[in-house]
Length: 120
Image (cartoon, rainbow, N blue to C red; front, side, top):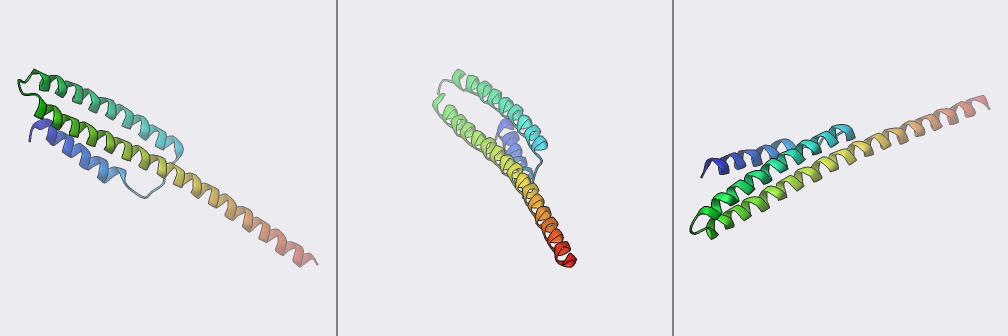
């Protein structure tokens, strides 16, 4: 296993261990995380491009290119999963805010209703 593959494996583990938590995210924080993810994805694609150039210099480049294609596909899939997870966490946060507003309105309504009953 080369240095690039080890780094990719470590990066993959970090994505899955840090990225998939059940907590919610505010939209601003989530958008910042998505921007950071885009930068990391660009770096990953540049790494793939450089590896592709090295593969093409080899006499028998097909096996190298095949491994590189698998690495690319797995990496892109992980980035997309991470992005979807962030968006889900943002939606969860927005849903929690809406629920709190509904609960507050309901409590206010019940409070007014009780006051009216007490006045009668």
